[in-house]
Image (cartoon, rainbow, N blue to C red; front, side):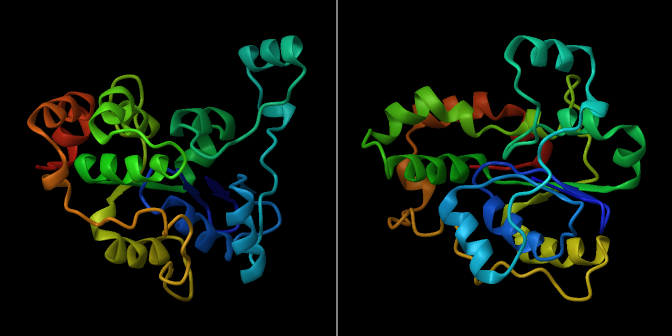
Length: 228
């Protein structure tokens, strides 16, 4: 995720929504005071090769701690930090109400059925397991509704863009954060080579698996009107 004080935006990174590619693209415009969380070494190398800023300023200042943060630090002696898929509510708590209200906040969501298939192939690269078994046990790992909403299931970001409309969204984001050019992720292939099989999700998801995904992603389906 990224907190840009230079351009006054906060990007919350969800799963399987081209988040790493977008994160790398946004790093191009970050200043020395901005927060950029670490990604894999392979992806960090992409940033270096492009001449963009890599992970920086992600350790949270003691001045932003609340009681439970201090308690955890006393017990573990580990400082709190921003991380890859941190929830928006946690970021809001750390940056404070003023910054949160003044900065443009956004993320992406994706059709849950397509998202689950993408997630499966990403995992399958390291662990060969049948699709149905994996998603019946792990589909919840790709549900991100709680990442951009509060405990009352109210979305707390300014915009949640659909991954399916990413090109249009990039144009809007570029204007919102005041760039003099449009964001471009077409040449950034972070994690893009994982899935070779491009079979449509409708051919891969059984009725039982669909019912399970419907239950796990009920908030996303209702909120964004995704359909099978």
